Length: 246
Image: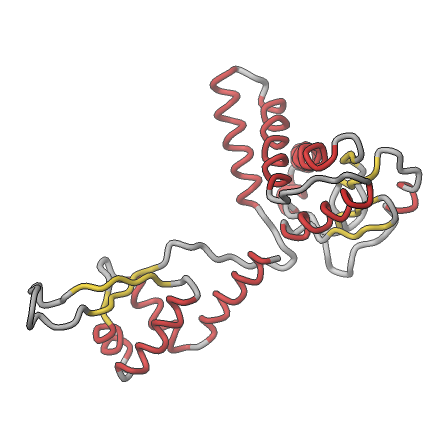
């Protein structure tokens, strides 16, 4: 996943102890800090602070601007100093991949919709999840003109969303559940949310060719995506997940 790669790279930058100390110092300040301030706080040379701060900026953990610390402007005011502050990007890595933020957004939007329209909450959750599924499908920027093409799109897009899809014939088994902890405690609710999400996704990719089916299995997602004419579902869903994947 591109987002996974970005998050791993960004967080990996903090494996260096000096960068961690610089990052923590910058984040603890209520104002952006200069290279000199950061170097003094951490107890390293300015050139070393510059190198590490710029690396943190390059990976999106910090953001920077330029100001004249003297407050003067015009000739003789000196060069602007670079200052650093916490970046606005968020980084998170879980293995296997989880996406509890997506589930939370769906539920929050559904609660708001239920309160506004008096729609039963479970119906609102299902409707909202389907809308989110359609939005995920829109990122594909193409649609399936055949079952084979549609299933290739499903695998490509759902890989980006942590489902770890595995195609067997005309069925795509999802070997990882992005909502695993929630599903363990609220199985029926979360599985129905997930089914609606993936049904909205499959319908937007190729409604006449694909369907999402709620078919729970051991150590995998509760939903599969298959051709509407698939007669191999029973065999395909027996494909087991990788060891340790839930």
